[in-house]
Image (cartoon, rainbow, N blue to C red):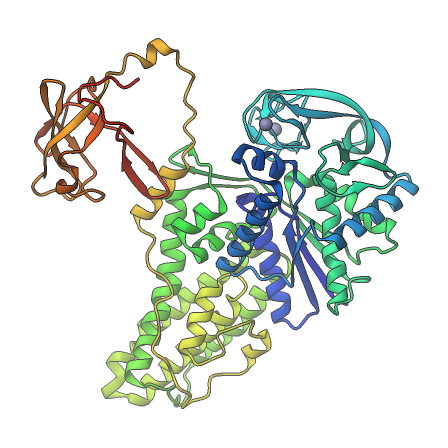
Length: 615
Ligand SMILES: [Zn+2]
Ligand SMILES: [Zn+2]
């Protein structure tokens, strides 16, 4: 029986919690494919979120054009992260509209959805919203984005009970309308509490509701049935979804999926096999206690794809994750870079330069057989961990094994055996290469880049999924070894700091105009600029402000040369308290914009005298 692995359709590819679900589904699907099981994996874009429509208006774009750019971004992200579902769907596909109407009709006939009284949020600036409402959970006080369930405490979130509720796209205040609408009664915290979830709206955006022409389906309902319409495409592509075992990974936000999805499958006359719904826990990233607002592309830009994959899959999908990025950096450097990457590089480099080919082992000793035995037990343990969606355990077992293999290699020290006992050196290298081969096969669903680079150095197929069956076929002595490329470079402080600088959430309080006017901001001309001796980043500037000269030290030496600054008009804060940098007293500060790794000094748009006020 085939398995259908599917993760929630995404409203926004930049949503890191969604990405966490998708990577979990991808690891599982890759593993099953490697195990030779029939797998169809799907995910895709929920095109008709009111967010897309609303964002397009804010950005002055046509909605379809904005949708197309989201779809491209999704494709790029999936490729960067080596996430390779069999079907990458899109709910603006006309085939999805058919499925959606079909599911709706069946559910309405069977009474699962009925007309009921519910509520709708309306943005003061731009009309109806489905669930793009942000605010604070009334139960636990944490910041929430979107309605449904609180990702921190699981409480039900409605627009009318959210504290400080506002539009999630444009920050405008919202109002709440009561409506009589097709909807679903969600039982929350037992039978006692219920929540009416409307499934249709009047956005003029989405799939029209049968027999109710002006209305369209809500994004959350469309996303739910998308798992089925994407799968139906899989069926057309040759899979057999009808009786497939369904595994579905969703954010906690989608807890109602757990209740509704079996009913949707039931209405379609299929059970979903041993339908398994995995609800991912909440994900919180911080830096020294400060919360970070990260996006998928920012994580990939600063950490690279493999470290991002690791960051989002090292802990099991169902667990809540609170990660300090500096702790994350430590574990990336210890577990991936040192234990795995450097070990592999050390062995592959030595084997390549001394032998060029897989050496022929001599008679094996007890300690060699111990490592071979460990390969077997490690393989079995990793396989059963991933089968149980326990990625966390799978990682731990892999790193423990890598550590033992590295200890064996260091203890046996083949480099010092080369002359005295070449046969023994060859055995040790052979056994260690075997350990690396097993690591490269077992790690492929979790760490595709490490796997592919290691396999390529061992002259094994490095593209696509290698079957776990391959674990049973040892390296052939005499097979060629290729020049290894290091799997990883250390994750530097600079990389982590730039991620933090871009993502730290500075909740600045409102100020009144009198507070702002306490800042003495002026236009200044740069008269001279030079590097502060023995520093990399510091420039000493002399600036003229009206009739006065000032010395300002600024740490823009990596972005600007002294020459390109002289003669420029810039903006400075005059009444900053003086401070001393590398022995030079600085009186004032330059104003610069920073984002996307770029630092840009502010200059006035029109010619204006130095000394002019900035306000
Ligand atoms: Zn809460
Ligand atoms: Zn709005």
